[in-house]
Image (tube, rainbow, N blue to C red; front, side):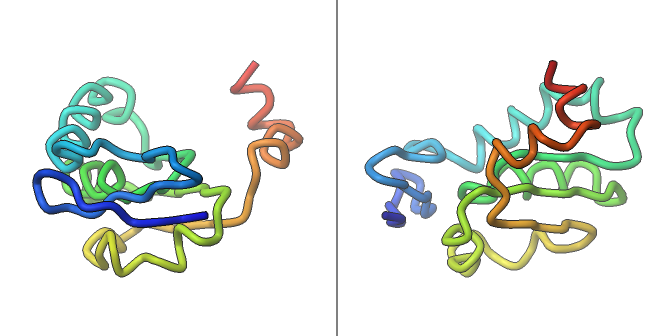
Length: 117
């Protein structure tokens, strides 16, 4: 079951069956640091594919850092996208979100299974 939990910083983060899907302390700050660490990998690409939407903090950080890049988010849980109001509308821009795609389905796509091998 999906629930939204308040963090110490006042943000809301999703919790799925008792497991937090983002930091309970400072999810925005941690997402910014996460995006910063991916600078070399992302800088040379036109598009970014992210597995997992969670609270959207990391997607927002990517979009803020590289606003011109297309971002495709693949999320297994439909419920996450249904509660998008919790993570805000400001990440849309060139962001495409596809929900309901399980990791198993993704691994059956030849191009993705090749990358994951």
